[in-house]
Image (cartoon, rainbow, N blue to C red; front, side):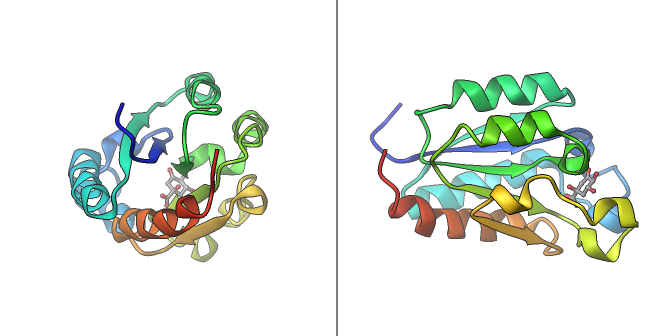
Length: 151
Ligand code: DQA
């Protein structure tokens, strides 16, 4: 681990299938492509990234807990857990560091059950509807937010 501010990038269930999953909604870019592009941008911005994807709620909670006190920020696409997980929300609340919520699709243009996020009101910022570019925008935003945040 270097001296650069460390940002945890979390992706929830089914996002490992990006590229083949509902391409009309989520595009054809894979999660590995997104991670590579984020790494290149992080190098420009002077941030260090750690990536984690899981289809399991408890695994995401464990990862968020492990990061407690060790990261300058969390970028999270909680995927379906956005709409259901009090556990993910409560784990994020541990952190004084900023949380940025990102969704590839515009959740407000979709089914009513996707309009409610259990993360948005505790996040420093939320982005949705920019496709995979949302991850880059979230990272740029995080560089601003984490820059002003001291552990
Ligand atoms: C998503 C939107 C969620 O409603 C959905 O369950 C996902 C992906 C998005 O990135 O647009 O899995 O978070």
